[in-house]
Image (cartoon, rainbow, N blue to C red; front, side, top):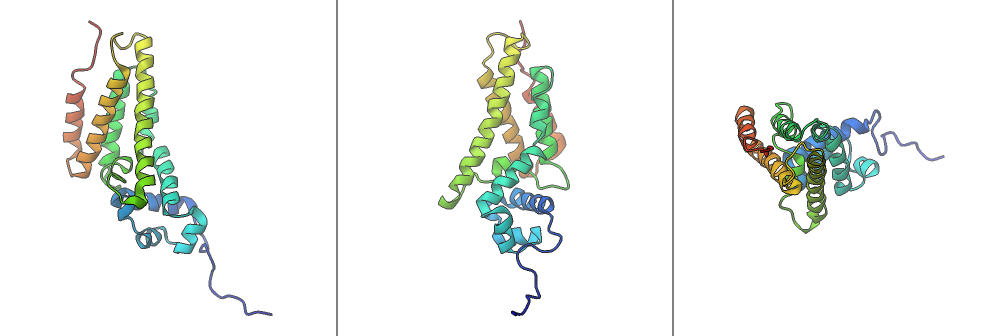
Length: 203
């Protein structure tokens, strides 16, 4: 009979997938995809590299799971904003959510979906494309909501929903970049208010 292994193999006892994903999200959020090394990730997650691969796949697969968590958690303000009764309410809620999420004291500044992989090597192209698609999906959802606002008479009939959606989401992404650069919450809120000062209205 072979000698029994004394140490744990694979996942450590008490391994919490949710907690590990949360910690990985914070590492990617702070350091970006390529800046987050495996040693930093596994140390933050409290597991070995072997356990990480067994539970989540490779680094890119882990990032995809983290982005899903980010979308359903910190970035869930987009879905809530789209439920606002007016297009202006949608825009205000979206920008307010961006300011709030990108400047939270207990979290990294900025937005995982914006600066997670803007500049990457060849090995990170898949993640860069993933985040570009994530941002475009957000813009598409806002455009569809603004199209509904035009159809319902909330926005003037000559409003271009696609252009207006691109304007609002570009503002949101710009806020995230400014937040990551250290611009404070109050200044970002004032900027968002000023940017919506020329909102299209019925003549």
